[in-house]
Structures are given as C-alpha cells and as structure tokens.
Length: 274
Image (cartoon, rainbow, N blue to C red):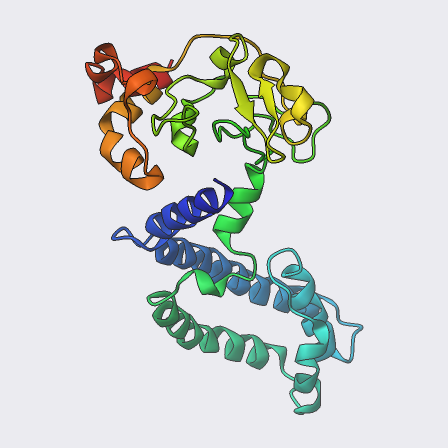
C-alpha cells in the first residue's frame, strides 16, 4: 500500500504539473515575472539611496550592498558573488544600474526557454515527496485481511485498528481442507468459533487471536458483522482475477451471495462518500 500510495501521488503530481495545462511552466513564468520586477525595483532603489548619500566615496561597493539587501528575502544572492564588480574601475552608479537593467531581458528570455522544457527533476526536494510526507501515517496491515491501519501517526502508541475490515479472500484466506476462499471479514470471524492456523502449526480461535502473538496481538479487532458494500462489489466484480491470483475458488462456504452481485459500482462508491 505504501509503495502504491507513493507511486499514485507521484503520478498525479506529474500529471498536474506537466500535463497539457503546463502548470509548472506557467508557475515558473509567473514567479519570474515577480522576480524580474523586484530586481528592477532593487536596481532603482539602490541607485537612489546611494545618490542621496553624498558622504560616501566608495559608491559602487555601497550600491552592491544595498542591491543585495533589497533582494535578501527573494533570492540567495551572496554579496561575495558580486565582489568582482568592485575591481572593474566602475565609478558611475548610473552606468552600473543601467547596465544591470539592460542585461536583464536577455537573461529573462533564456530562462523562459529553459522553463518550456522544465520537469520535476529541477527540484531538489520533489513536490510529490513533500506532499506524500504530509499524508504519512501508519502503514501496518491487518494480518488477516490486509486492511491498512487508520492511525495517522507512524509508530503510534497502542494497537493498530481499522474502521472496516475486508473479506479474507483478498489476502488468499481459504477454508481448511478445501480450496474455497473465505468471504467473511475479520471483525465477523472474531465473534465466531472458527479457528486459524499460525506459522508453528497451532490452531487458534479467532476470538482469541491475540494468543497467536505478533503481529496478531498488535491489532484491536472488535466484533462487527457489518461489511462495506464496496468490498462486496469488489469481490463480485473481480472474482475471476482473485481466484486466479490465489489459485482458489469462491465456492462452498465461500460462495459469493447473489445480493453482493447485484450491487453496482455507483452504489459501492456512493457508500464510501458518506
């Protein structure tokens, strides 16, 4: 589930950013427009401030200080990167500000050409990784049906639990001495007299599932016979695929009820939206 979640988020982010709408390119263009305007503003304001300070002899150095200060909150522009300008015998700040302003359009056009082919590899921290981390929760799965713990905190205290369990057939559960898949859900089985086999060949009643030790004992499964319509529809709709995947059949005690087969996809999804 975690790998699928990561893959799904990445796919959706790529579609959103790099699809026909080219949202990433538009975002970069928009950001460049703002930055371009701020740089021009910084050039003008730096020039005006230095011109007003008649007592300063090293006006080029002062202009560079002001220019970097103006852009501190916008871009990472170390003052040391501009130190070379101080050794080019430039003394006219009007000339310097004009040269800076005239150099910007060419740089802007070059960047826009690069934006046209931009992709997510440009980002040091990928957007889909940042987004996925915001949804990070517990990924432990029920040892019976594979349902993912609904706790939103990784490494949380207490037992794992879910609101709704799934038919055991989804993880290949079958009835002993048959090839019949189990359509019952865990929360129904823990109220029954049925047993399950653990790795050391012991048979334990579902209602005493914690006696099997971890990972079973780390889960809180309360008796509840209710099953979501979605899983009834899912089992009915993907019956052949599930049987093929697990090499078992929905027969005997695992026969799919007719009522399940009458559930439509729309009805199943509508219940999930409630």
